[in-house]
Amino acid sequence: MNAERDIETVVIIGASSSIGREISSRFQSPMTRVLTTYSSRKPAASTEQTNALHLDLRDNASIDGFVQEIKNISPRVDVAIFLSGILPGKSLGGYEFSEIDEVMSVNFNGQAKLLAKMFPLLTERSRLLMFSSISAQRGSFDPIYAASKGALLSFVKSLSTQLPPGARINAIAPGLIQDSAMFEDMKAERREYHRQQVPSGQLLRQQDLANVVFDICQDHWAHLNGACIDLNGGQYVR
Image (tube, rainbow, N blue to C red):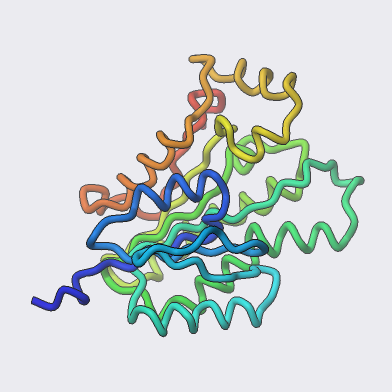
């Protein structure tokens, strides 16, 4: 048995966030090689199994270089999780044109370009998960953010029949996540507003989200393909 061949390669895009770190830690095991990305500041020194690679989704050359780095490390991608996203929190009239371009580049365009470049590395066992948002389903005060997250859902549906047979792609659409960067940036009254929208009165915890993400990538979810899983506690039901 070839031990190196049995090691799964897990790529986590946008793993430098607190949510990303939680998800990355959930995937680490002797049988995985976890590759994470950062866009500005490199995280603390990598372990033997976790490599932090630079990636700027706004830069085509950075996307090309990142995929080449993956190829130098592994001949395939078994799991890819796309976490990247920015939320300016502006109404349409508050946006500069450059800001619209940046939100779409990070939240959708860059991720689509990256996946297109990664396609040759996908196999019949590949599992892909893209992070959308409750805003994609319900709408938002920030229409550009909502549109970028909505585009991901159409993207996932379209690709579900275009991947290698047996591979699968899905989306996850959480509401506000407790102690996330978005949560920390909000004023106390906005946090409380979001909490009151959830019937249980509790926001989604990062560790619970990480457990859901990890579980979705397991074989017993093999028939979940082209779907969006809503994790909003029932505050918005489709």
